[in-house]
Length: 303
Image (tube, rainbow, N blue to C red; front, side, top):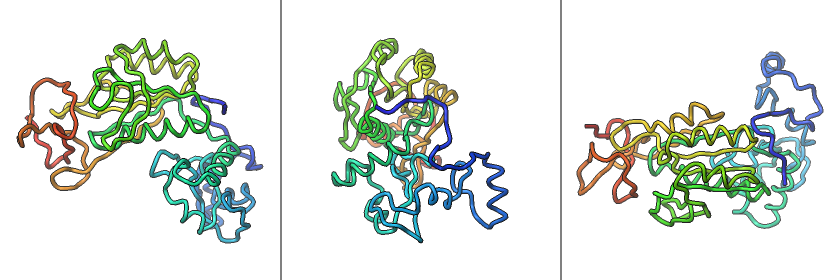
């Protein structure tokens, strides 16, 4: 199992260079007409680290591309432990696919590469926030699958009130699912994560305010915590729990959907019953596409 380092970041030892700060690197590369690529290092630094060799096919390259091993468009990050030199052919064939979506040979190559790069959670806590149908649970599910695939001890939790698709799993609107423990109070999360490395909590807006204390305790214990929740209710009021966790998190992913009316970017959740917008009522109402739809600011109807 790979080590967890919590919120601590460290330079990649295999670069075999003095790890200067990003500002000094920027000054250095501007003089040479080069661009800082990541964490104060240029594309050329990454190529030197990787011996100008494609990590997938092993070809020695003069002209190279930089590939995000775990795609940025999925759940990957722009960090040194997630970038490698690749040839154009391998990069094009891999596309934006997760390791388990590839053939077994390439899966093994990617797994070994991530271990070599000491790929690990780069923050202690992460919040995924957005309206309904913005693939928040899909991101959480893919991240949980990734760390489980890498050998971490993973635990997933959801509020027991969310029984739309299945009680004992986190299930997306697209039908993807992962086993999760339904809980009625936040103490149950602490009681079931003592030997766990990475914790995933879905629909955090349905928990009480003690969830913020629980997440901070897990962070202090060296755990990596990922929470996903709605940014606001159908009346346009922000969910305090999601906002509170976001304020204290190390990284926030703002998820967006597509407006059901005009197809523009959507950040609001509209309740619609019988073709009419509902703008007041009980705040917590568990539902799916039969009750809610994403809306942009222009199409969202307030009270």
